[in-house]
Structures are given as structure tokens and as C-alpha cells.
Image 1 (tube, rainbow over the protein chains, first blue to last red):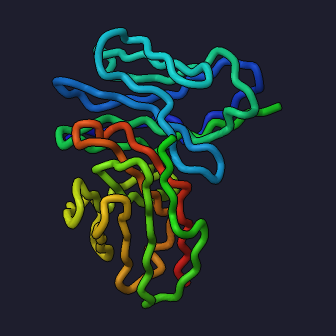
Image 2 (image 1 turned 90 degrees about the vertical axis):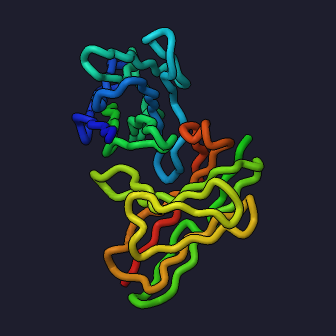
Amino acid sequence: AQSVTQLDSQVPVFEEAPVELRCNYSSSVSVYLFWYVQYPNQGLQLLLKYLSGSTLVKGINGFEAEFNKSQTSFHLRKPSVHISDTAEYFCAVRDSNYQLIWGAGTKLIIKP
Amino acid sequence: DVKVTQSSRYLVKRTGEKVFLECVQDMDHENMFWYRQDPGLGLRLIYFSYDVKMKEKGDIPEGYSVSREKKERFSLILESASTNQTSMYLCASSLLRGYAYEQYFGPGTRLTVT
């Protein structure tokens, strides 16, 4: 069965600094990977997805993620964070039944 | 824009009560999902539905049931609420089975069972 590990439960970072949120998945023949974001008091929304093709995927709000098959990772990055990026970020992988397997989430805390 | 609405943002119920959580989507999506979100555990799938009157168990169906009588509406039922069902409940929908990954979420219902 597929699984997803988000290595950090919280990541504090200063405003305008770069950030990386880490995600590792269990190996599979074909992998579809996703990052969702949950802003305070809201539901989740899709940030970006990797289905095939270029390993560098760009999403909304300046975020990008890189699919690394050899390291089974799909880390999320942003070169300069803003206070409005305060949210919880979830990594997910699609399983063979078309369902999403979710990581535990990483809270991004922006320090002024 | 896809809109998924949930009947309540906050709900407080007593142990043993029957609880209904309603979810409505307005984009003619085939798939609907109920998740439970707890700190440190991410999202756990309770039930999902690919069609009207059709339901399938997710990872944690015990203590829950669902109903989908109309395409746009998916209800989660707690037959006899217990304190360990205190949680955030998220409803989601997606267009087609093969597109289950692109899910659209409602704002969530925070349920407290006392």
C-alpha cells in the first residue's frame, strides 16, 4: 500500500526567507503526487500536482515542487514566503483505487 | 468555481445523539467524499460515493454511515455520537472517478461531542 511521510509537523521561517516542506512517498510503479494547502478556517485547495513529464512542477502563489524518483521525494519550495502563506500543507499520493493517501500535514509558521 | 458547502461550521452534540452532517456541491461532480481531520493524523477517509445511492467504505467507517439520494448531496450520519468522534469533518467532491485526485473541499464542520 502507498504511504506518504511529511517529515516536519511545523516549519517556522522568517518572512521573505525561502522555505522547503519535505514529503516522501512509498515507491510504486507509477506515481501521481499532490500538494494541497489549508488556510486557517478553510477547506483544502489544490496547490500543484505531478502526473508525468517535467519533474519540476509549478503551482499557485509562487510554490513549486520537484519530483525525485530515486529519492522518492516530492518536496515543496518557495523562494520567498509572505505572511499570507501561513497555512497547513498536505502532501498526497494517488493509490490504485484512485483515492488519495494523505500525509500528516506540515504547518508553515511565518515569523515577522 | 466549484462550490462545496457544509451545513454547519461548528456543532456541539451530546454523547448518544444522532448527528447529521450535510454536504452539497454545485458542479455536477460524480464523486463525493467524507474525511475526518485530526491533528498529526492528516485526513482519513470515512466513506466515499461514485454515484447516487452508491457508497463505499474508506479507512475508518466504524461508527458512521452515509446517504447519497441526490447527486449533489452527500450526508454523513453518526448513529450514536461518542466523544472519540470529536473532530473536524471535511467533505470533498471530484468530477469523475479517474479524476479522484483533484478534489474540491468544503470549509469543514468542527464537531464536539460532550
